[in-house]
Image 1 (cartoon, rainbow over the protein chains, first blue to last red):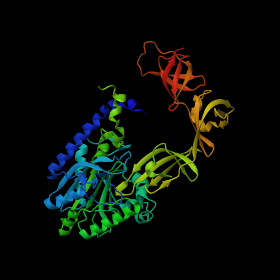
Image 2 (cartoon, chains in turn blue, green):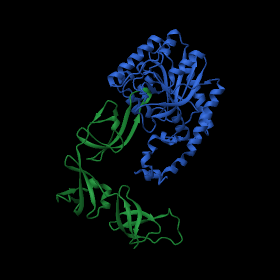
Image 3 (tube, helix red, strand yellow):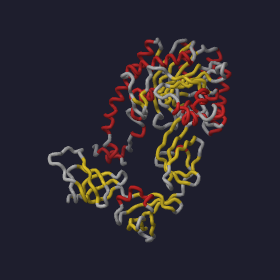
Image 4 (cartoon, helix red, strand yellow):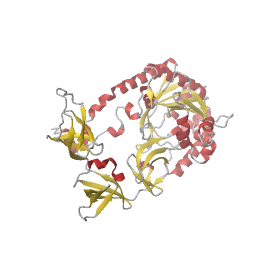
Length: 329
Length: 188
């Protein structure tokens, strides 16, 4: 389609008004809930010299030395350790090379962290927050991807091992050995589990819990993920606070990245130093605000809940603009 | 070879010596894990469909495809004959290759045939063709709402929905990609 024809489609923006109203109400609802729970709202840098090293998450470069954050995690944990206070943040995060019906390269993330807590207390938070948000956005009854999702009722909670035993053709460890964990999760487990109930999968393999604490009882990571109708909404863990183990995991992630041909980032020394000096036990979570809005407003793609999906932008060199918008002298 | 970042709806790829077109494409990346590229594929030879999930490191074969510009010549029994306007070489295409497009074939229209290793697998017609309405009921008088339609039939029996004000003998433009009425070209 040529640019002039595309320019004519601008009124489409108006049709997004209901989704944008819902977004504003969701942001208000989130802030109200955190204020009531006595959390401190914080803002941390978007441009980072040392993002957390993760095997499969790439931060877009920004300037010569920095990256755009994939998550505010390290800065928020530094604040939490210093203030010994629960903190939350809503803000933009970035992922290189991620685009699809539920992925935008730039999206809104909600993260919160509690000192003296583990991932089970974060689950209690999540249930309360999401029920509150669903109520504020008009209660239940919205159909999302063919399901009428109900946050108010019982949530389904399964360990990753249980879910694989029940729904998949292989065990978790075998899937990992064959390097097919994600594929089996997406193709066999998620379509079969959940339904209209929110699904919590907990006890992820340690290899997939970059900054999560190891549960001594199971040997798995103290990490859970929330899915709604197969869509991943949130990722929570009891935070790893052991400096040596953290360095080991960064090294392992760096090695995997190198073998894949991805570059590695410098390491945040202030974060490691804080771990070394002693960190309170704590837990935290990252939740995709755009995706929550998709579910609560019954829209199947992430493009429908943002005003300006990246591919909708239309640009021309300054010398050529008269071709598109007429003579501007 | 393609990499996973080339994958998108409409891309043509080859798997185990068979060409496929991607009819649906979904990126997903569960739980901080590796990215998955879930595709629905349709065979360009048999039309059969299958699901295939690719991962970041995968490399995907490019099918050996070539296009030729031809004009539609005539029907011969079930087959449809196209001709290269420069070399006069003729190609006989089975109706399965054309699908619903057989409804829009007219002598001398310029088309493109896509070949997979010398085998014709797909025909692209001009986006719009003109056709005469052979039969339609007169629109009810006073019914002027613009979005009201009625059925009409072309000379080959193909049925389309047209605005209520169109008459038998009118020539209309049809979008061959959707098979739908586009606009009226001339009145009867």
